[in-house]
Image (cartoon, rainbow, N blue to C red; front, side, top):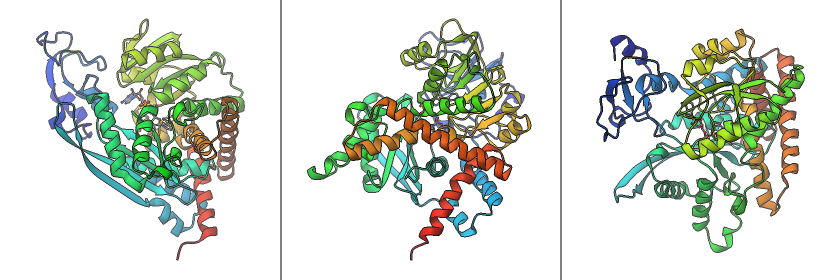
Length: 490
Ligand code: NAD
């Protein structure tokens, strides 16, 4: 790599320690590697035509260091979350003592635990659970398995959970957790042992009336089932059946709820419908692009199809694809299940990160990781609306640019609340031994999420602020009121 290209990645935080990076150098298009080399492959993502370094990246897919560092540049999400909080507090002149409470977390747990690997070796792993606030009810929030998980990220995501539950008015607080590892590097049996051992290490720091985990990046109903089973095994026989609601997002057979899988995507689409209605915009024939095609992105994409909208570009960790005639999201979801990512999906053109962001469309749904819409990428986005499925996908600099360019935003703490709302329904059903039909779930979800949208829009008008600040104002106003009414013990 030339010095100039090296310089471009300087100052960006690597996604793994240098020790873990397995790098090889070779000519693009002429990989001078042995047939048998485990490192053989081409970086499909960057356009550097000369020497390029190849790394083993975050989810087992080969990418070059240059691309990786550019696309997964890590800024401090927690700092951004606190900046956003201060901005809203200043607008409403929030009580200074309450501001101090909201700016900090209640409890932070870091656990280091050993797990036996398939080859008999022991690996030490680090897991986190941060409980930000429980003024409105039990702590609630997802669990993420990812090598970039660290205490600051989990703090930030836990804080965002408090805003979300307050904003949509459900009786939960905010928490988040995660384990710092790349599940792509481990077998299913090893992931099960990691999950169970982490659950055991958390012990009574989670509980059905205290702190309730759910799925997030790289976790799913199967992981929730293992957590439930492990948690139950530590209870006395008489307690066991009262613990079903220790996690949400469970498989249906284990007490999961209808509609939980699609819930976050469904919530996003209800809000896009509402935005379209408010702006006299017809979703039939509208063009959209999606970043991240996991739970949130794929469901949002599939539900947009029902409106006759057209998906033209998708990016995930394996790369980006584009087809101006439209991509069938159901068929793509089947492909991703079989192949692990969108890369190589037939009859589409592979494109790089920049080209993905430049794709002309009406709606962009970021549904991958945080900090994707930067000052740079916001300048090249060519859309009317950003509906934030992911948590923290927009950096403050990116936000300013979106505002300047009159691109509407449905902010994350409103846009992706479908998941926690239906998690609340699952929790209620478990407590009452009930099973609700999907129609009931969808109707209730729509009512709650659209009600929150209206409160945010009213706050935006009343305080003359953008939707993100307005959403934050609605959330903290509720918390401020509760603290004032309850007072602080003793
Ligand atoms: P997931 O693990 O199911 O999917 C993540 C997707 O992001 C995958 O398609 C992956 O390939 C892609 N991705 C990862 N790194 C990427 C990168 N550098 N560039 C492009 N794509 C990349 O996770 P999910 O549950 O769909 O969560 C996605 C986002 O939505 C996260 O920010 C999560 O916190 C948020 N969220 C999830 C839920 C939920 O119910 N699952 C609820 C609210 C918010």
